[in-house]
Length: 309
Image (cartoon, rainbow, N blue to C red; front, side, top):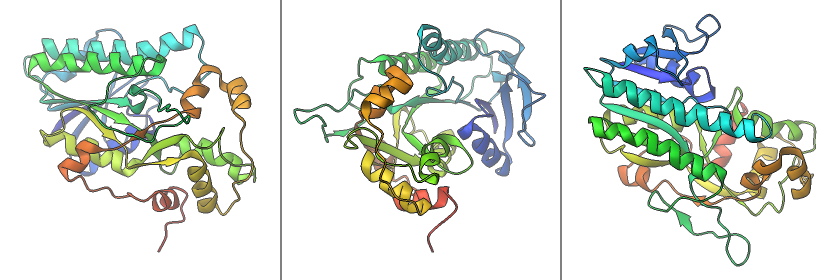
């Protein structure tokens, strides 16, 4: 298969490209700087995805498009400029891709587009936290990230009018080695200063990177991957996650991060960290998707290089 990948140099994209190449697919990575990208045997094409250009021709005759590109949500403190960058790097790029698909004589069969579980509202009940399960049929929230995810998915969904199957991968916290969110999360633990964030009662929905990659690969051929897909393996309290990270690193989990300190440090983003939701992979379960890492302790052990025997 000829597969177009955006965001190929990112945490998920880099590993995904490697797996696709192992399966002898023809991978075309749309990147900003081909001279700096290191993606093995993938063909690198220079692309500014927010505007049409010669890269659009690559979609004509492609079998699939995997769209992972987007400014990191936690990369910088949110101000008006950063919020616009978060939007443009998702909304405008997706719109450009769909417009290129519309013009292609031979259109791809599937567009697998990244999204996030931030699509859903925070789980706030009378006691402060609501444990009700959240599935793909639940409505969107109304905070910044929820609106961003909803608009992102709407742009991708427009490709269905051109006969393309579209799936939006609503991804939770991705665990894995060699970078990613866990690399930042484990740093305080390595200095014996790790612990829960805020009350620690907020739910965190997680998945191992291996299972993210397996889901994207399955989506290439499986027509059941259509519409929103909750890409999570399970949900745990933040305090439990902190204890599990400490256990995997052989470190204590005893220094909590107060909510007010987090708000001072990261601003508006703090609300997404201090609140969560109990997202469940209803569609994946129905499809019989087999998780390589369904257990949090095992996922963390593999991620920090201490896989259990």
